[in-house]
Image (tube, rainbow, N blue to C red; front, side, top):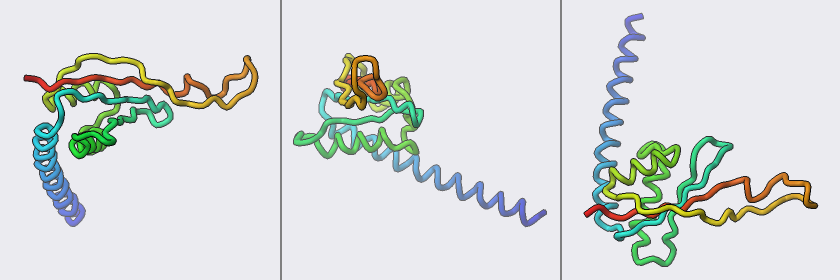
Length: 139
């Protein structure tokens, strides 16, 4: 029994050390990401009802800010760092990173219906719902 208690005590210490190392990495990443990002960022969030969360994407291809935007996308998608599971979490995470919410608008659904006829709708544009959210750096 004493060995079991010692084992759990050692495991708790190791886990806490691991978490504190992740927090310092997270803080360093926050500063690097924020410094290199443009004034405005558009983030697309898409519900994934099957998995119970949201998918976050940022269009960074051929952008002069590609590296910083890609790093921000990775930071937001990584559930161990930001733990974003819904749009409320996304709004609060961007606020803590130094951005303010500006506007939101519907993105194209981009899904293909797999049915025939007017009365049949198995998979269609209602399968996924995507929203573009615009954020601006706080002054």
